[in-house]
Length: 273
Ligand SMILES: NC(=O)c1ccc[n+]([C@@H]2O[C@H](COP(=O)([O-])OP(=O)(O)OC[C@H]3O[C@@H](n4cnc5c(N)ncnc54)[C@H](O)[C@@H]3O)[C@@H](O)[C@H]2O)c1
Image (cartoon, rainbow, N blue to C red; front, side, top):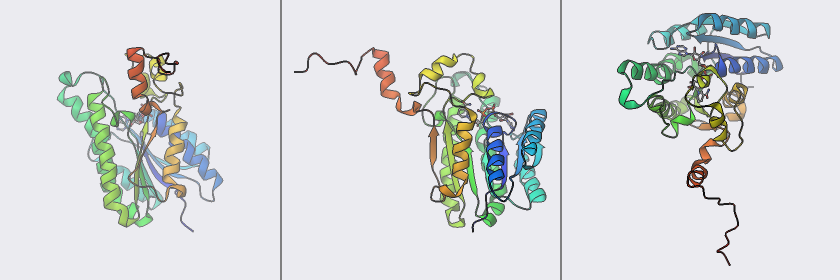
């Protein structure tokens, strides 16, 4: 029987989707013979510790490491911790992300560099660092991309570029690592109720809900469920894929055009015979 996916690094684990993934994998571990063994990392030390305590209370074995993923040495340190504490690694959830609003014409180089460092380069460096461990376990990677990786997004130019590059990184890794039995995928969340989304002060939350056909906000657990699926055995034939978890926002383009021109395409056309 294949080994359960239990030894997992989760970045951005102190809040939102990362926290929800930690909780989800811990609960899945309750149902299996082997409890989850999680390395949780985030730049927010206190919040990270409280998530660690919470999932420990649910039965997971947990190691935490406060680290800034903009620092190119952090990925090696996080990986070394997984090796030292759990003796290996079954999966990497590269989820930490930062956002920066504003037009590209005014985006400072330092902001551009930080967005790319956290959202894109850190996944590349984590992938490099964890490769020997994932090859041994024939493990799996899931990165958190974004709906913004699929479409140019007003006032999120740097972020959209970083996430689009992340998607290609995932596909490239899937290509290179397939023969090692390592699967690499991404999820692309639409608007999800987390701190990062709350920072979108210029965009009333009603607008974000209105732009998906379901007219609901995603909860972090919606994203965590799909990430857990991609890590698990039911996804054994899926690699290089990106799953949009966006309430259908991606299929709204033509409807939004119709709304902008105020044409009601569902009305009966009286000119038809
Ligand atoms: N919430 C949404 O609407 C949404 C939509 C699309 C994509 N995403 C992506 O989902 C991922 C998770 O974000 P979230 O929605 O849970 O928001 P969140 O703000 O709750 O979580 C992001 C986490 O990343 C951590 N982080 C930020 N910079 C870091 C750094 N330099 N080093 C280490 N950790 C760092 C933060 O401390 C935080 O805990 C991000 O990659 C984000 O871009 C979110």
